[in-house]
Length: 102
Image (cartoon, rainbow, N blue to C red; front, side):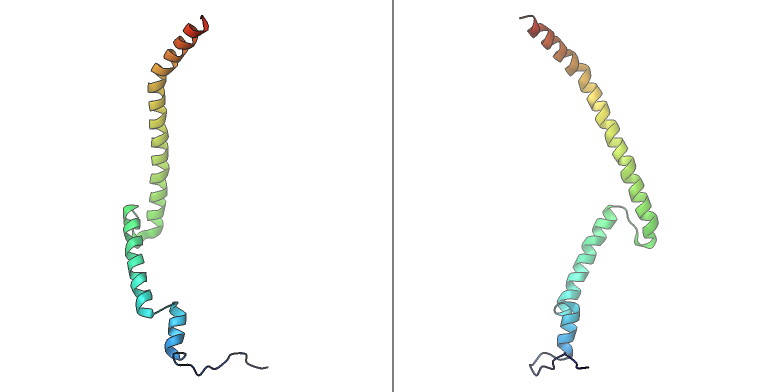
């Protein structure tokens, strides 16, 4: 069996190049981006109430809170609808009846 890998004599194709290829770029730059991204994701997770010490329970709590919040939003929307409908529907009905007589 022949080995299809080519050995290059170009500069920069040694161990440093393998490290760059593994990281997908300069290792220092990749590590800096990973640190920044980790901080941003950490802030978002903290805002969502997730705790890295107990991630599974935090996820369950987050889903439960979103579920409850969704029902609260529907309940509020329903109350606003009823409050507005008490005025809007009778006025619409009066206007329709008064216009149909013309």
